[in-house]
Length: 75
Picture 1 (tube, rainbow, N blue to C red):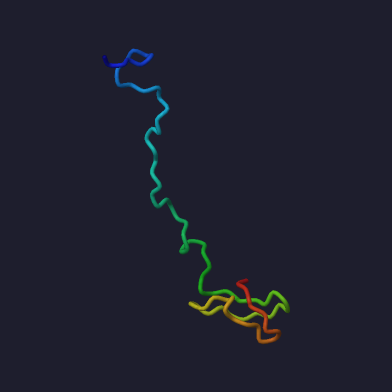
Picture 2: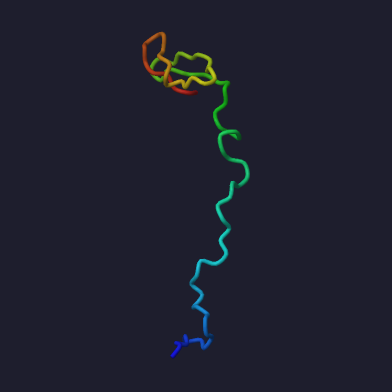
């Protein structure tokens, strides 16, 4: 015999399913291009404060401060 659930509607669940999700899509804006770090700006030494212009394609943390030899960071 087929089972019948409590509501009497054969084939209907209790309503705890996932529903119609919105998906994850790409959204609006976001990502590196809008508001991310750009090629301009400066690299700064966290120890002595020395500043140098940032070069596109070369992260600041790969540069050493010419004054105190500390790894530089992005300003």
